Image (tube, rainbow, N blue to C red; front, side, top):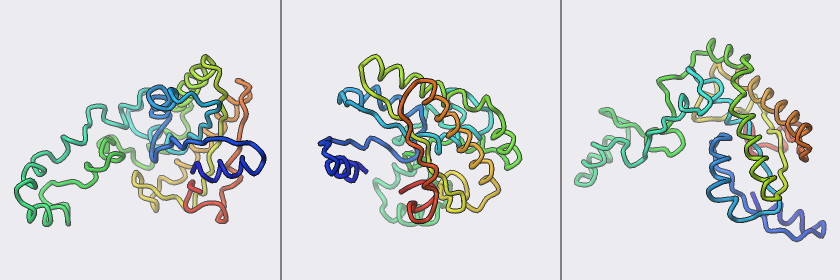
Length: 228
């Protein structure tokens, strides 16, 4: 949240306007696009990037592609989901009440969610496939490339980049992508730790400040596995 950071800086004699541009569920692909389309034009002095947890989902998905098209369907549009049902709902509130309550007759509430609707569940890995993917260093290519591209964009505008690792309290994992009680949790944790290691290495190489948040992975700081 932006307000606590603004207050903390003001208490230290640093008046600052802070904008929270983070969006739940986004990967570094969306972070980079958001910077170029909506955040960069605000001309901030500093940009703080906290990516790596949501990245793990795309990194574990089957048929990996660097553009993450294996994870998010690039053709997905919310206006087209459940289209036949939406047309019926315009004339029948009763049909809406009945069908949506139990997701009957092919209606999918998941397809109506801007975050989860685009996910390619046909390529969901098995737990064994996820563990194999977690150990594949090639799965970090896109994450590294996106962070490097972001750094280059900021540097060209004279804007400082601050990189941050992500906390991950594995025992409190909560997600709509994977079942929190599933066999995937070790693979997710392994991938998040690898992403944190990559962020630390990039910060050192690029000479950017690093905020290490993973030591805060405990109950007094987090509401679930990663959110403060």
